[in-house]
Length: 123
Image (cartoon, rainbow, N blue to C red; front, side, top):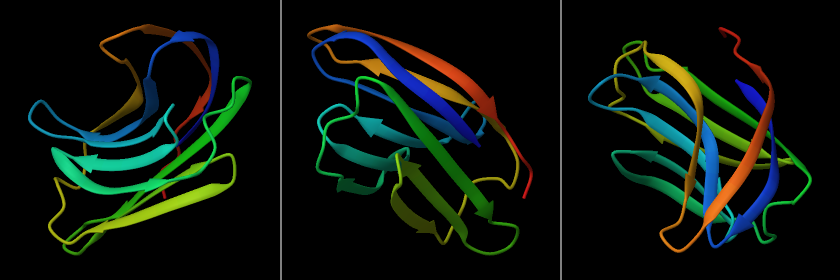
């Protein structure tokens, strides 16, 4: 999956990302936060890593891969503007589920983001 995300305006912290294998009870979220952290999560945090720079105020290209998990481990990979974070879940969620985009504003502000060119491809 991939999407271009642009920050139009923001006050306070925010995050945006891609969701995969979503069901009513669980999902994976691959996100970039405005404080410079990549995060891959499943209910509880799997992996987080600082990517150094804050998210660009112009267009950010996000790519997320959720591959495998059919009787084995699931590989999760998030790439933002060429920087990549990977995680493996040895006990993955169901092998199918919904996909989408997600944005969250922090408790002390709001953010307006624009998403373009959302693409989903089956591996």
